[in-house]
Image (cartoon, rainbow, N blue to C red; front, side, top):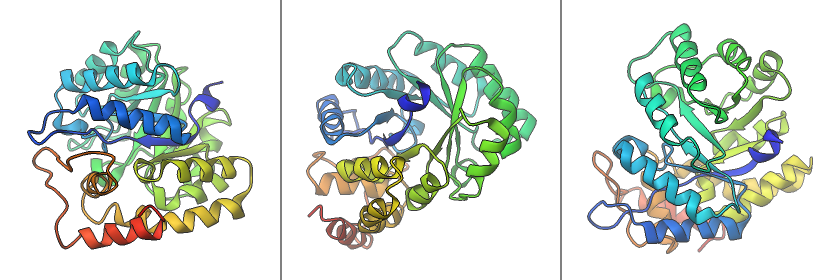
Length: 296
């Protein structure tokens, strides 16, 4: 049941903001509706792409609760609930107990560079404070630390640690983690460029940035991949490859917010400092990727 709940095309959803940098809840509701209507299989609210790092705990929780409210049971919502202080991650997780979220996505602690044992103890402590399903999130390019498959295998023995978002882009980890964590452990790619290959090797889905702009295509691609129709999935994947690459031409979520603005999904491409709007030099790259994808 859990694998079906956390599979397919899951959006790492942007957090829309008004010109003053305040969360725009009217547009958040529209984005949730866009994903429901497009066949997206799940929403991560306030992950990296949702600018969790510059929202307060109170704002993080409110955005998550509003996303659950707007989804109204039609699509599972996974809460971004990670932090680099274990105590803060526990506080966030406890605040979400009974909220209606399907589970929590918890990132490897960033900046302080814990050991493998430190990461194990961090995620173990979070899991023990809740009965919510926990999905680990490994993104060394952001955190400065790499959660190794051996540590994932240890963590998989904890009942409510149910899966991982693996964003190294190293697809050889699919087999390594499966061998160590077992067949029931959920494997989600966090790298759009290698997401289809990840699924070909046995991954269950993709937590996607591209999905913010091409939700229907990503849903179709993942559905085809889960059905073993990889050739058909590859046709879609190649059309989206420009987005997979160029949505990272500047730090995520700078390009995807500009792309959402360009498509009229949000009214302002506003981000909170220290992130700034996509540069004039980079805009043509995202524009070209949108054209290649057939979105404009």
